[in-house]
Image (cartoon, rainbow, N blue to C red; front, side, top):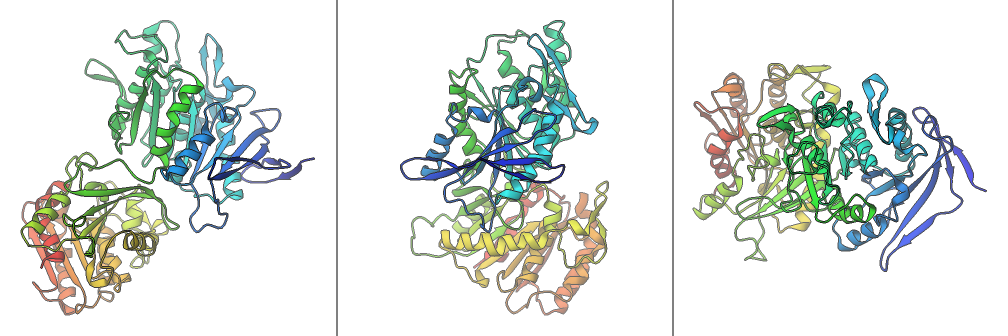
Length: 598
């Protein structure tokens, strides 16, 4: 007889613990499956079976929790070979450990696996020749988001940030997976959709009406972007033969492509897609893997069936949970780490650029420069405006010319919480502060997590870098640098950890936030000029045009504390320079040479 345990979490729900645990193992590794029966009122008359796959060597007391993947159509677990695929990828060391929550389909699958409008608390029902689809979609989505997710977080050692929570489905289950990610962005930051049923429409009169009223396309077209979210779509090349718009591309692929790229007639966008909302996109992920926000993979010979979805799994799981990120287009060698987890802040990518002589001199050790906004440093395809800082080219040139020491550069990507992570917390005494950029409003003090961000760099990332690479780990060989808000957090890092960071590069520092609140705090928290170096600069155009009076105050404070121009201190003005990656690229050699010069 099974034990009934009721859990009241955000609306409740009862978990019927199975009397035993089943095990799945390969020749070298073992995972555990917990089988739960979870009440789902309004969705199913009887409890739904939910199987929780715990990764090998799961640790309920781990310092950093595990990411979680929720899977619709959990009854297909064996048919799509999910356990075997996970075992293979674990054995290869290709992916990080992940908790998988496989949810059996509700009895009314067509009713549950549809679209909803969360703000209106309603399902979006599509009438089809198969019957209505989505009549229970709101109830199912609410149950999964507000009952099942809190229940899993309470029972297991999970990470609860959106970047660590994904949802996957196929066919109608993929439709609902996208709906969950779109309607609940505070929960799900990753979505996988195999052979998604994006063909559902509000009107069915003719092909043109269907094309014009596709429900998913409408949902995206009328929405704001979900910052930080990432989407993986996969379609087989033999899914079907229907081509409603006569463009030579079958509907399943066309619908997914339109959702990503936007629906166009000629060159005119008829309905916005993810690209028009600001997401970077990749329509050829199979042949050219990259780090774009929304990717479309095609499976050669793939059909609308479970064997094809099994073949899609390895690529998706590697995209979602791989240790290594796809390679950058950069000068020299870069090691790229994907979604590096932290106990203090959301996960993020980290790129490690190695100096030209690193491989040729196996006993030499190197200083390290930690840089913020890492996606803007090396590869223009990833940069905010399509122009990167060119740190790889600049370092290669400076080293070749003997103007700088060879050094390792660690690029730390930002997240949607950039402001909260980069704003120094301790200088803030009020409840909020003005950001200092027109239209951006105020930043609540309670949301600032810069101390956690520095904990991540100092106590998690730096030890990893120092043990994985041949570094000179002391203060005199450890530097930190960033632009705008990245300049503020760089100074805060040296002030809070003066024994860790010996030099700061603060480019176009955004002093106006809080009307210069950081400046007065620095007056009593500057690191010792006998052991530290400080670099500042700014331009005179766009946002940088505000910075001169603030920077002059900073320069006076720095000099009063014993820093000397040209020795351990530099403050430069670049007339006409704007506040952008393009401007910072044009002068990046200056701070690099100041910090790393011979």
